[in-house]
Image (cartoon, rainbow, N blue to C red; front, side, top):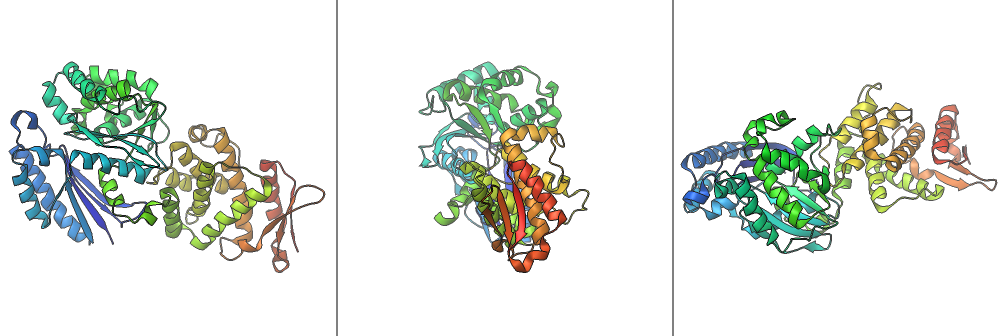
Length: 491
């Protein structure tokens, strides 16, 4: 059953409806209204009346959408502006009357923990510092596969930093530096990632992506080396936002706070000292839902869960996809094809996704599958992994394993993953000719080492007529890729 989160932030009020509470979340509906509840809060200590009306109007609309979607459980949460304003309790009471249920007011520590759980939901064994930049505050917290550190909050949200500095970016930088340098997380990012959460930082990264003419327009897990990011941020701070190169990629409503997001990020680079910035599309909302999961669900790999779901939705036989995982694993072991733990999980995902393009026209299956996979809302995979997964499917349908089909993505994957995509694709091409994507067959196949060298793909005697010119031709293509002598026979 669908679940939903209404996130009442200092800058935006957002409704996200998810298909269900799961390890890998699927968004059914997503809408935000930039109400600006936190605007002017520093000077007045009150929520602006116009902003309150905008937020309450959005909540009335969201209430109807939640009912129309048949949401089983709604989680309304509110952050800095609602908890800190003098009239925050009046606003919350009005919002609760509209939604007909209590609103969960998150403390700064709650926000930090929620953002960290969002990163745990969206990455595989993340290790680094999480920063969640909202309109009213910046939360920082250490996250490792072993658990979370102590979360902290600072008054460095875009709206508040603009108010505190009186619109003076030099003063804003001094304020941000003083808070981040005094943080117990100062220096803790060395050699590690800084996971950036929040709309302003996402839009900064979108602008960076546009200027770099980056080939994969997926924000989640987009990586920026810290060493090269400071110069970009310096230009953002000193320039008219409407005249920045690539600014059309950023909505006009988001541009006013870009410089303040750049200021806070420069403080992070200077004092937390991360090795790289990694963007997270998942934050407090997804982290809040992650907290509702059982320990068994939390332990699952979200990439594998997302791939499994796509297999159920799009493949001819999800059972065959699961059997393919085991078959390819046995083939790699028999043929001595080594893999790291990360390559293993990517290989499992590729097997589950191998047949999702079958409904497309044969001439376009490769390109369509590549586009679906590379741009899918899959968590816990970096952009190299996305390129690998898409190319494995592309090569499988395209037939040719020659490079320069999709040069930007091929270079993004890197040489080793590119070669592994070709290995998988060529094995897929043999396998699907022998099974027609039907379950219950692959368990009967095995590899036998030949006394004279090489390996034989052995089929049971009752499937002898499957052996023929086309399967053997594809097997020889696979043999060439793996550098081994291979043959096929029935016994």
